[in-house]
Image 1 (cartoon, one colour):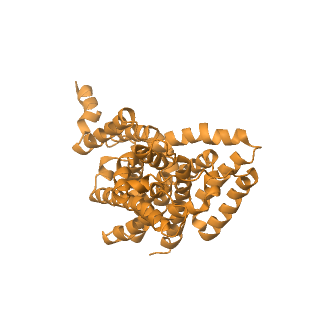
Image 2 (cartoon, rainbow, N blue to C red):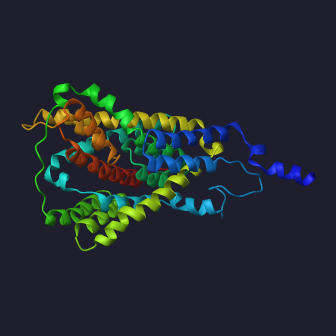
Image 3 (cartoon, rainbow, N blue to C red):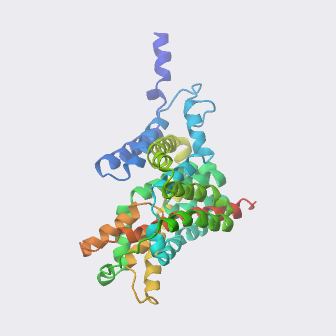
Length: 377
């Protein structure tokens, strides 16, 4: 009987607290959204199950969590803490990205740059809410709607906030189809949403091969802090476009990125233990993340409208919403909203230009923030 009582004292039921139960419920909600609503299932399902695993309470003398040194989960989480997984994700993204649309209509790159306004406004807001400059910089990158970049920068600047920042970034990426359409419709008229874009020109293989090398040199020299992320992005793209390393490119964009996505999502979820995650700072981070994402979307749309004041061939302002880094979901949302007005209006390929430019822009912005804020005491 004494043995039985001792065993019952080691079970999760004996140590369960309301915070653990709440986080387990949130994990179940994430799984439901992934399966029922098809909201970013490749991200939300691993994160959701990881949150359940991370919030199973254990006895004090049992070391099992991602924060307990020497455990299996701790070794897996090392890739998140040290920023190993995000560059590998970028390698896979590069290997599956076609920059032809960007090269055929370079002016749309400006929309990707304009959407990064959400990052810098959030930086100011986080600072005035009492976060340190480094913490504010890590939180600000949520405005780019780029989960890997958010994880990478927070691991460098504010590792204590990594879990909340990662969950916020991936949550808003998953909710792109919910958050963006109302903002896009509010800021555009039906006449603007009906604008059709000219077909993109054909881009030669030589241009596609030269572009990743030249673009990397420009980005890395401007912001050396972005070297790892943009380096892996353009390296993956060069593997794809060179025509001689298709096997490597195929591995990067399929098996490798799938494995890393599983590990990244699960470990991020497992890091959301109630005692470290359920804090007032987490609520502030989620609020700032929502605001920054909305501002980034609006910034891209409004800048497209501004550009139209000077262009003979008008840009469909909906394309500006694709300037956030949620690839390819923001581009798909642009296509969806545009086709609701005109089923024959195909905006997807055009939207990929600001979408991919947003990925590059958020990585460069992260490099700038890292370089500047590491010098901040």
